[in-house]
Length: 188
Image (cartoon, rainbow, N blue to C red; front, side, top):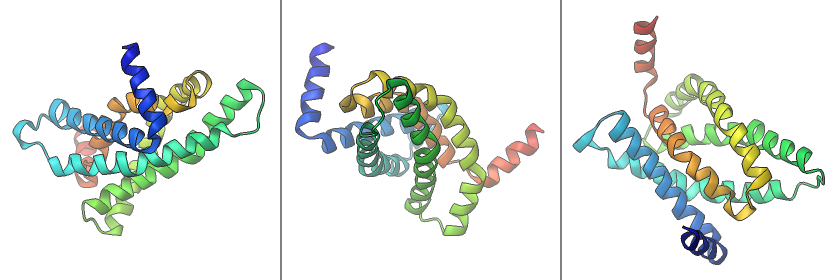
């Protein structure tokens, strides 16, 4: 395991953007695969185009943007480690996460060929609940990540946590607002 991690770190130091993008794309695909196969039980009806959309999101947007974001956070001029960690997590979760999640739902909608009114309806229905769930997961994860994990491995740490998170996001992105309303009527 140590040799594998050392090899991965060497790859990241040689090609950080490509390494992070490939890692993210694979782990986003894994999350979508779990969503479709284990949660939604699609079997042979697996939607590979859907998987492709989330791979594009993970590899082409998420990894490069978050990798740069982590570098920006690392340069915060705060000497006290506790204050620095709180500031990094606060900025990450209360400034950056809403932007990333809004962009995620918008990008998924655009890649599906949806019109802006439909995308806005999706954002109105799903952004706040998804953001609240994000905070429950990622505030503690980022506190550990920002305080204990070296900068080059922070995206990998997030990507590992992202396997179940990407499963959740894939389900959220592919649930319709109309079916949610029907589900809520049945539940209540």
